Structure formats: C-alpha cells, structure tokens
Image (cartoon, rainbow, N blue to C red):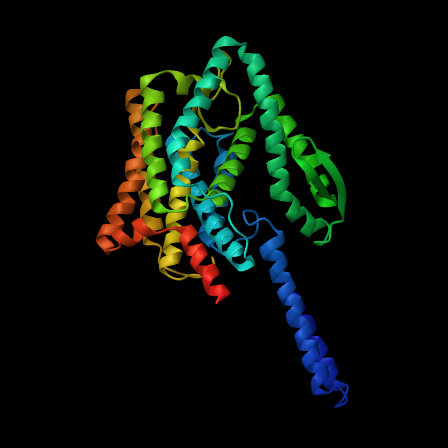
Length: 412
C-alpha cells in the first residue's frame, strides 16, 4: 500500500514538471505534506486499528510462531505427532507471541498516555492461590454432587459466549480494515444497566458481522467439542492473557510463582481434585494433544496442558521482556535491543516443560507442571541477574514506578 502511494506521488510530480514552471514550490510542498499525512494515516491504521496479535508482524520469529501453531494443529488431525513435539513448540510459541505483544501494548499505552488498569499487586499475588483453590474445589464439588453432563452444559454455554466475544474482539478490527476500509459505521445506544448505571452501547458493522461468524464457530465447538476448536479458543485466550495481564514488578511475579508452585503440588499430588476437574470439564481451559487416534474399539487418547501452565509463566516471561526493554531504554517494540533475561527464561521454560513431559511419560502419571516450571523460570531470572551484576536492579524493577516517573517528566 505504501509502495502504491509512493508511485502515485512520483507520477504526480513528473506530470507537474512537464506542465511547466507554473506549479510553484508552495504547491509542491503542500503535495509532499499531503503524501506524508496519508502515509502517517496508513501507519496509524496498521498500528492501532488492526489487533496487534493479528497484524502482519515485522518480527519474523513471531510470524514463524503463528505458522507453527497453525501447522501443528492441522497436521495433528491427520498424522500422529509425538505429544512432546506438539506440546512444547505450541506452549513456547504462545508465550513468545504473547510476550512480544505485551511489550507492544505497553509502548502503545505510553504513547497515548493510557494507564494500565490490569496490574497485579503484591496482595493480589498472595491471594491468587487461595482464590484459585476455592474455584477449583468448587468445580470439583459441582462435578461430584450434580450430574456431570448438566454442569458441563451450563459451563460450556458460558464459555461458548465468552469465546465468541473474544474472537469478535480479536477479528473485528481486521474485518473493518479489509471489508469496510477502516470506516465501519458505528451504531450507538444509551441504556441503563441495573446496579451499574448508564452505559453507552457501541456496535460497528464490522463487529456485528464478525460476531455472526464467531458465534457460528462457538456453536460448532459447543456441538462437537473437537479438540482443534478447543485449542483455537485456548490459544487465543492464552495469548490475550499474556498480552494484557501485567505483574507490575519482579517481586510480585516471584510471589505469584512461589504461591502457585505449592498450589499445583498440593492439588495434583495431594488430592485428585485437579485431575478430576481437568478431565471432566469440557471447556477451553486446557490445550489438547492427540496421543492415540480413535479406533473401532477404542476412543481417542489425549494429553492435556492447562492454560495456567502457559499463562502464569508467560506473564512472568513477558515481564522480563519488558524489563529488557527498560534496561535498553527501548521505546518502540520494533526497536532492536538485547534480551538476555527474556531469552534465558524462555529457554529454561522449554527445559522445564521437557522435564515435565519426561517425568509424565516415565511414571505414566499426571504431573504438576509448575513444580518444574517455577524453579526453571525463577532460577533463570535470578542467575542471569547475578551473572550480569543486575541483582538489585531486577528486584527493584517496578512498572508502576516507571510509569509514574514518566508522568512526572511530562509534567515538567
């Protein structure tokens, strides 16, 4: 598109020179300014309107991650791929994509002056394992006390609606750009919601069109429960979670990981709660990897990886990528800078996941993945900081403090 605009501008300049000296410098300057404004407008559309996890990425590694996710999902439907060769690349690709998008979102918010409301505080990190335990045990009781099919019907109906909405939010800006040239008509309606107050409902043509297809997709998942449809929902939710959730500081991340380390061990090794809920709950709270195809006499056998084993380490690794950007004073996600903490943590996440899968197959039993992933991620971060002589800087890193310092500089 930019090349097309550039060629058009060059042809206009050539025509002007052939017409003679009557086109003065002011007109040429105005024409050049108009072209720059058009180019800037196109850059704005590409940066703002298209959802950043759907835009065509400059980062070739990120593009390769998208391709690998799609390839693995499609290929596993026809060819029996060993579970480690499905699970490890998929989880790693999701974390890489989500982390780079979180950095891009941070820079966009800084540029627009928007404040991030989804920052976890220390008290939230302390409470998270307790709240998670309450929800997990509540689901366990529901499956034990009530009819499993009825519970699944209610919960999957809820997740189908959530899934349709999340897919619509993800794809509608892209649909607006491609089908409506970025100018999709918006319908507004004032309404009052009980216990909330006045609310302005805004629906664009692109949003409504996208929702129709997203609802059909959700209905297909609701009806078939096919693992590929489940994984598409799970992957999109994981990427969005890593992108938008912020730990705020390294200390908060360490508190959260340590708390969930003991949470995972207790609920997997201490009780049958985690395994019962994971295997009974037909919802995109896990990624499903085929282990054996169905035959005439036996059902298909699958291995699963909970989204928490991707998102929780993922938001910690994303924090370290943003810390790398902070160290390098990078103000743009396309800027090239050294990423020692990010790369080392991503590597050790892979090693931790390899250890999880290896132990799972050796003992033929479910494993609490965070038992291996938490020491791998925390250990890698602390070791990297120690080797680089940045131990104090890492412990002191706080994105909220960074944001307040930036605001004070602007005020000056």
